[in-house]
Length: 150
Image 1: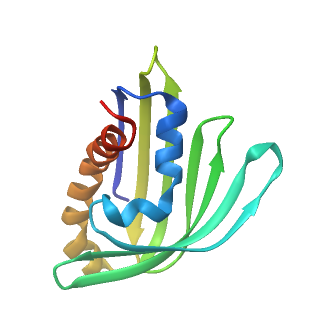
Image 2: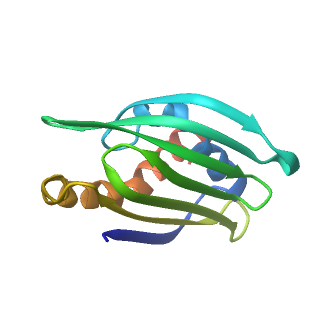
């Protein structure tokens, strides 16, 4: 199964970075390949946690696919967990972590592993997805600079 992980420091605090990543409705404005994102529903849980179900449409040239995920936001832990529900994947798991590392500095951890249902689609899209995931961290960091200042 293809996977990708990264961990690096950014010049923003963990709470701000958590909030930025948790604001999934804004992804089409800056996330690579994300053409559309629609939140189907949101449920507030105890301890400030919440769960949402969202459809994300990714597009690149002639390729366009929509998949559904369950997103669990854990603000107290500064963790976001994404679980795949439906679409072109056989499996997709994504995890974000945010840890303060000084004044207005945090370490952002990003992990994803996935497998397409179709080998053909996997071979066509695998390289492009890998490149996009490598750009995710910088896209979110650039967005944080824009939203919170440098």
